[in-house]
Length: 251
Ligand code: MN
Image 1 (tube, rainbow, N blue to C red):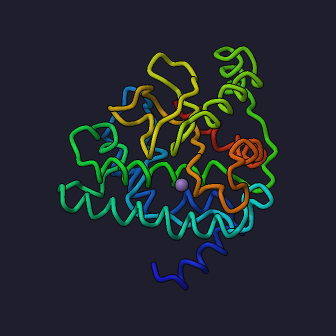
Image 2 (cartoon, helix red, strand yellow):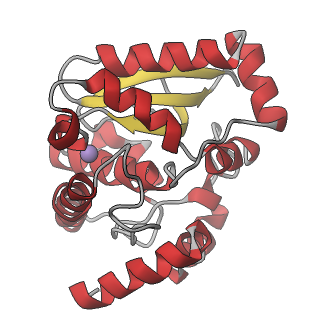
């Protein structure tokens, strides 16, 4: 997509909301392509199948202010995340990966691929998920059977928040904190180094990511400098619980 076209698309997408993102023809094609695949962890993961191309942001760069500033979003999306997609496609071409199939297929067997595939496949997947898990003025909370499941597995919503905050703030160096639906059918908190994620066969905690929180310095340094805990605290205000709940309800 040319930059000008992409800019227009982002503006249109921001107006239309997340629904535009999900309705993209590329995603529909992937869903169709993934219809015959199965995952023991997430029977309906194909609904959320991820392609190899970067999708438009579902909101404007400044939409998440004051939690995340516009310059951080611009650089994060257009430089860091764009590079993961570009490098992933290079690795896919070199390693003869069928890019019409969901990226999740590669991630689940990532030990069979190169380090370049692992870093950039994870990097691309994680960011595509991260953008969708945030929403301007979200201020929402989990509801229904999703909230019931959180309360059953953690004791309370606040205990889950506490555990995830600890995972995010104590991850040494660069990485991610996750809310995961694991193979024991429990919701758990985990964290991964670098761009690894719970879909990968090499991950310590394996499962379906309900949401991921980027704790690389590039995600917060311009506004928060060394204050990662402040970034994490403000992330809760823009977490799109409705979308995260849809992911849980698909399982
Ligand atoms: Mn990032």
